[in-house]
Image 1 (tube, rainbow, N blue to C red):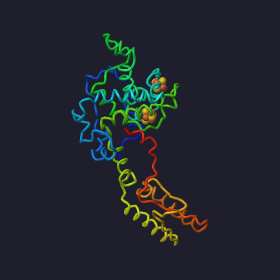
Image 2 (cartoon, rainbow, N blue to C red):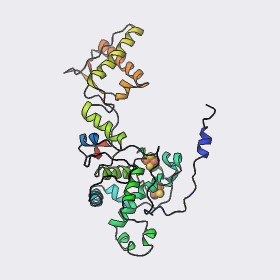
Image 3 (cartoon, rainbow, N blue to C red):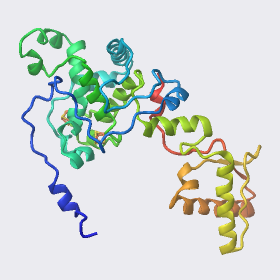
Length: 314
Ligand code: SF4
Ligand code: SF4
């Protein structure tokens, strides 16, 4: 324990100093640091979700096994989204780089990496947008030093790798947007960035496999129906032992008054399991007092918040 750093000591180790290099420079390969990146999505999960280019790949290897026309795919994807979403177009155009969002992101506070400032995370995509979709960008790319002046850059493989690395270092919490004087929602830009990456099969396993589990088992943990039922019955035994009340639940009951769906973590992991025992006691009370009939489903067994995941659909 004595070797553990205190929170203050940990913070002291983080370097918030400015990097004198040019962040637009993509001639140097992006540094994907062990412990900082998420593993690549498993091909079987990508396939289950119906997303393209399912294959085994490793972010730390040079070859990401992209389709030959990957630049065209991303270019078309940006164009389509600029036409569909006015917010996306506005967010690409209006940032004044005031930096008010910079120190609001926990990823920047925790790493000191400038590209984890919301403004710079978004600039990874904006720089490509400016280069390929704006008149100024098209003119400036022909002038020596123009790209640095305009903050635009072509979509190179390193630029793409940076997007993957940093767009998946955002929890979509939207804290940065609260502080932006223009109301720019960097979380939405990150979502768009991830959508674009999905067009090339570039997802992470923390997202792809839980969502794939929802498709195949009805919950993100991949709990099979019989295991789901066993867990609830185990809780019932505990409750009966302590209270003497039998709270045996119903499953898949047609015509029940209430279909109850809870986050699967409540069924599987502490401390949610205690909450789940509370549900069982409550449902027994509702039945006895008001005659309300509650049913669980071992197939629709995920009530977690996946609010923005449908956007992943191609
Ligand atoms: S606060 Fe808004 S305008 Fe300022 S740098 Fe951040 S995203 Fe851009
Ligand atoms: S939405 Fe993303 S970029 Fe913004 S503060 Fe949260 S984690 Fe950081």
